[in-house]
Amino acid sequence: MKYVSTRGGMNAQAFSDILLEGLAPDGGLAVPESIPQISAQTLETWRTLPYHALATEVLSLFVTDIDRTTLASMTASAYCKESFKTEAIVPVRPLYDGMSLLSLSEGPTLAFKDMAMQFLGQVFPYVLKQRGTTLNILGATSGDTGSAAEYAMRGKDAVAVFMLSPHGRMSAFQRAQMYSLQDANIHNIAVKGVFDEAQDVVKALSGDLAFKSKYRLGAVNSINWARIAAQIVYYFHGWLRSTSAPGQEVSFTVPSGNFGNILAGHIARSMGLPIRRLVLATNENNVLEEFFRTGIYRPRGAAQTFATSSPSMDISRASNFERFVFDLVGRDAERVAGLWRELSREGFFDLSAMKPELDRRYGFVAGCSTHQDRLATIRAVHARTGVLIDPHTADGVKVAAKYVEPGVPMLVLETALPAKFSEVIEQALGMPAPLPAGLENLESLPQRFTVLPCDVASVRAYITEHAST
Ligand SMILES: Cc1ncc(COP(=O)(O)O)c(C=O)c1O
Ligand SMILES: N[C@@H](CCOP(=O)(O)O)C(=O)O
Image 1 (cartoon, helix red, strand yellow):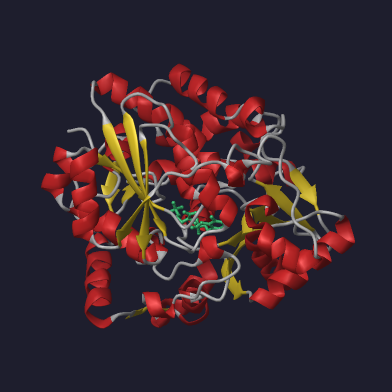
Image 2 (image 1 turned 180 degrees about the vertical axis):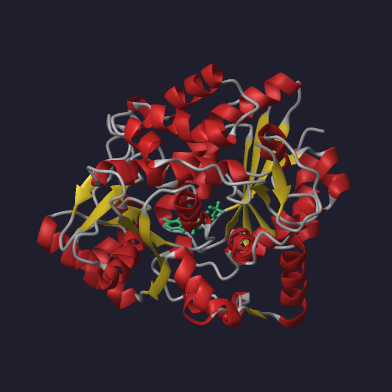
């Protein structure tokens, strides 16, 4: 399998190359040259596989330059009971009215980001060792990618992490998870801006090819295809655990921000997984919901990006949306490059003429949720089932309810655990979320982070001073 750029300016490259490359050199995103197809027959042979073995099957379709035995040992180390606290790795928990939770947040940092990051924590060191080189990972987080990446990479040789987080916009628990890490290879930079602005800085520095090459900058955000590849696995797992026969359809609801999670669902569906609907759920920052409703993509600036009670989804410029548009326009890289030029010139692009095709071919529907919806949903799920869900998952459950169809299981992706957002749980239920064993004192640990203005020059200077060359 080789990879090309959504904007057409990259020679076809192998998985390990794009793993280290992150953002494509032309500013686009790496995508597979073609989407592997899985037959119903093959799918049936995967029905009884444990999660790590399923991950080997799916990932081996995308990671063709690492031998299968090595890949299998990476997935076995990444998806183990010690890290996920459950044999199932991703349990499916029934709620009500045909909805179940796909529990993706049992990993070390209590959010779905661990699902891919645990694999990245295996594959990065392997490829770096093979090539005898090192990597300075530059990332942006709204609260969950940062901690998942730092836990996966802490103390690892050959990798340092420089993580930009939006100052004052994460929950107390999220801050403590990241900023309490004292490992020398972890650098937390709290920038005075929103996630989108931090992500812009990451893209600007990754687009400065001389700087990128001198400091060997890499990426762990979902702009890195390796993240998407590892996230595809749990759509297969969810389908296999919710069906009993070939061809049965399942719908998935995905709390969305940077569009990485639901893009993985789109790829799984394109591979032949019988997914009926991909339900995109947003909070009040509903740029993506607006696109799936109207066909117009109009990202918003920092001033129009609300600070909400599902803060990890406070995103108005979704990077991965570009990978979906690449497919929507028939994998025409020139058209994608043109649309993104139009976006920077006009502030929007209009694909409403493609709306009928969008509705017919891709299975996407969308909805949004408000603070009051989140509180009401957390209360309703708790009252009806005793299950406590986090505010992002609540956005999902709220929107999913509208799209449940008789006979079609609806899996809502649980993207974080409530302990990360106890302030909101307290508002909804009048009691804090229980803290997982071992994390009771996290928020009282000493914290180490640097506050910087959210601009390219400041972050460049910080990396120049602290990164190894
Ligand atoms: C808890 C949580 N839910 C949902 C999302 C949205 O996922 P994505 O950015 O892949 O759309 C994120 C991060 O973006 C998150 O951290
Ligand atoms: N919600 C994310 C935002 C970054 O998303 P990513 O999937 O592109 O890494 C976060 O928690 O940081």
